[in-house]
Image (cartoon, rainbow, N blue to C red; front, side):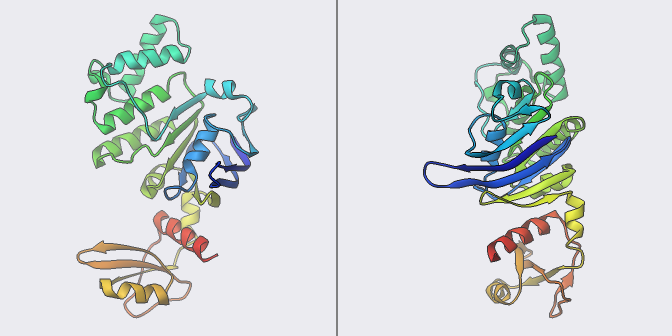
Length: 291
């Protein structure tokens, strides 16, 4: 169990990235959702021992994450948002180098670990290729391979599917799902669908504040019968925003489809729709803006 209590962080420029964030994160896949600039990366970097917090505490089992950084790093796997590679080094050689840094010094053991991880991430046939020739999805899978060195008990992946094509995204999400059965995996993202497909627990963060936490199915159930949909012309959008609690809008076949949050039935062309996690996300942000 990872426990975060009253964690706060303000940068020298005055931006308060985290505001008294408290979370309990159990084994399994945990999704952290929020818009760009919400504080997700600050929280991930703090847990990964890469920056200091101003206030609060973080513990992982018996480890004080903020004070026992070396102990955390022994059991941590981390894939940051921007994962750079040496373009002229092969995947096999680079992973072997990372394994040495992780403390796997026996050559035979290291070869076995590197081979196993390359197979797990479907990179074994590409192991001799230079990393500079890899696609975005291949690089992300290599990033997961290095994050899994040392059999970590806590894994953090920050915006892992941003920029991936649909096939690579599905492959990557399936890999994360397999990994997350017996360890804590924190998936930080602004892509709600990634969390909906993978995670057994989640939280929404915005402007450094924790807005909602829970099981995706349970929080979605809370919107049952409260989401209404309507297709309108572009020129009607602002009028509908003034009259209704429009939580989202998207283009579809030349018109704008809006979702409205309402506890009362709506007529005038509105149809009830089954709520999903995206509706939870947008309605939560809407309520924060109205507060």
